[in-house]
Image (cartoon, rainbow, N blue to C red):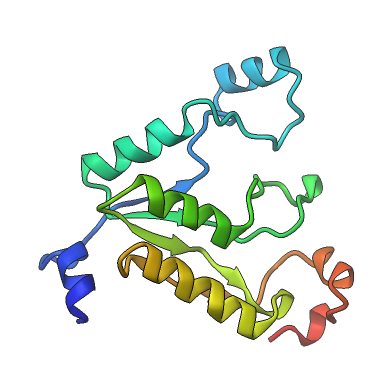
Length: 155
């Protein structure tokens, strides 16, 4: 195991992380608040975001995971990511110190490979080696035509 990962993950091989965004849109109170604030579904309440990310960092969570969802599709049935993945991880790198920062997962067919490599390397360097880079072929068919990529050939 790379020394940086050993330092961050420890020796027991088990860890608990959180998938971001850290908000309460899925609770009944969160839905009520979203409606009161006239935020559309899928637009996150970020007022406590930094404080919650720091709390997770200081509480010993081993990783904060960010999804790569380029386009919000309300019919897909889950929440989308409010921010571009690597920009968001750069922000998290600046406000956390202890947790690994993971992508769950970068949709490679929709990204230019060299720019993806540069973005990932930048986050890894800015976070002192805390990036966990997960990659995938994607699962939202409606995104592919927007990027000029054939969904059936994404693998």
